[in-house]
Amino acid sequence: MLAQTLMLRFGEDGEELEELVEVAADNPILPVTSELFWGAITFAALFLLVKYVLLPPVQKTMQERADLLRADLDAADAAREKAGSVATEVSDQLADVRAESAQIIDAARAEAEAERARIVGAVEVEVAAAKAEAEAEISAARQRAMAGVGPAVADLAADAASRVMNRPIEAGAARPVVDRLLNSPN
Amino acid sequence: MELEFPSIDNLVKWPAYFGDGTFYAFNKIALISVLAVLIPTVLFKMAKKDMVPRGVQNIVEGTVEFVEKQVVLSAIGPEGLKYTPLLLSIFLFVFFGNIFEVIPTFQMPANARMANPVILAIVAWVSFIGIGIKAQGLGGFLKSSLFPPGVPTALMPLVSIIEFISTFLLRPFGLAVRLFANMLAGHILLVTFAVLCITLFQPSILAAILPFSFAMLVGLVGFEIMVSLIQAFVFSLLTAVYIKLSLHAH
Image (cartoon, rainbow over the protein chains, first blue to last red):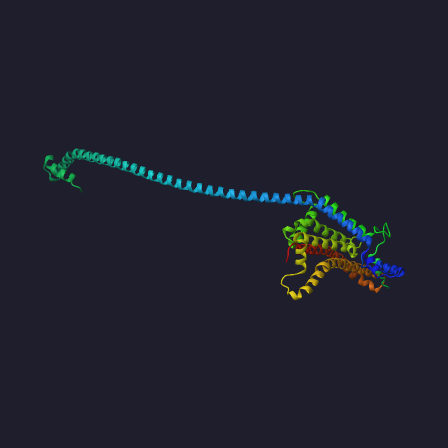
């Protein structure tokens, strides 16, 4: 149509016009009416289909997916924040528990130390008492033993001295010497 | 050996399947245009609505996302999302019009004929003018389009004429011719190497060149697939840029 309209402007008489129109229709560059017609019809159909039928459901699906992803991301962020706060809370609680346990351990240690000192003190007193009693018993036993041994040793010494000196010696005379020897530290 | 290259009419003109000689004559170009509507429709309808996209749904959503991000948001911004249906339609119509260049039995891009690029250029032209008038008012749109700020008063008439030609004539013309010329050139290139391969496929010493010619043909098929996509992207992106320029006074 475009080509024909352009050529009609230049046509004077009928014969020349027909020839010009034919030349125009043969030109491979110029658009042809029927192709323009079908091009316009089909593009209009495609545009209407895309606008009202084809595109809306696709965009709806894409939007729903984007919303879902956004919601999931928001939920993940919220969960992350919640986890962070819970972790902080747990950490704080752990710190409190650690401090409290340290206090308890310190108190228990102090108490145990005091108890140990008390027990050790009591045992030491008891041991000292037992030791003193034992020493007293030993001393008494020694005194008793010495008291029992003195006359016998004096008799033995007097007898031995009598044999050496070949004259009788009274055991009573040797008694002070024997007592002095038995009582000496060496 | 004789190289018989077909005439340009044999490369781009197709007989009508029906309605020959009428305004609704239905030929290969019209068939490709119809398929450029049917294929996206079928693909979009086949796409499931799963939260985890697979298969066709991936292709469809990937295409929509590509147009939204790489065309609408990059050229216009968030305010341009309401024009996504228009720009997606342009993208799909151009791409599926182009891709038939490499599909056996068709082997003809609909946009290597001037009709579809002209229609799309008119759509872009009407869109950015209509959107500009709606956004700025008729006076504001004409003022921002024809009288750029900062131009000396003496030069304003000349600049206004240049701006008028640039904005209202060259933009749609450039859109249409860029798409048409690129696709026609690619089509002729493919035909050239295909004809060369056919001609060389004979018992002759020149048959030694055939593998290189065929490799070139295969490479060009891949190249034209890329061109089909790029032209669809460029056409929709430029339309988005023109809409962006119409939305605000500059």
